[in-house]
Figure 1 (cartoon, rainbow, N blue to C red):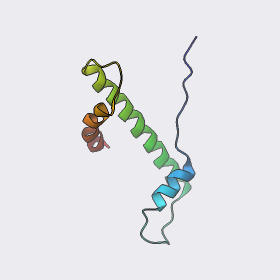
Figure 2 (figure 1 turned 180 degrees about the vertical axis):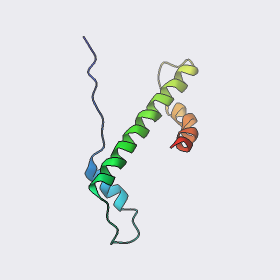
Figure 3 (figure 1 turned 135 degrees about the vertical axis):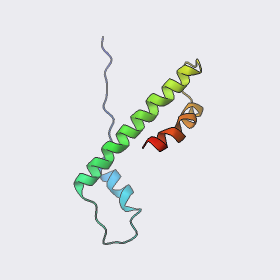
Figure 4 (figure 1 turned 120 degrees about the vertical axis):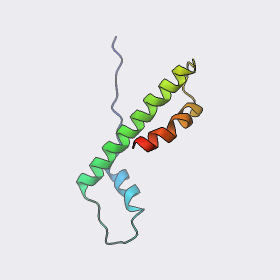
Length: 81
């Protein structure tokens, strides 16, 4: 039986509220397209973090990904994005 792959995504409204909370002026607006683009960017970032963490765990001969693996790949991941 094939494994069921679920697509993980961020809600547009959540991303909008998160970004809007950092605006300094009340007049600043965020378009719907910008929210969708940022949600897609967050999805790609999280997927890449998971893959890199998994590869780090494999390189250390671990069967399970731990937070330490993520912490090791995070600096380079942030530089890449």
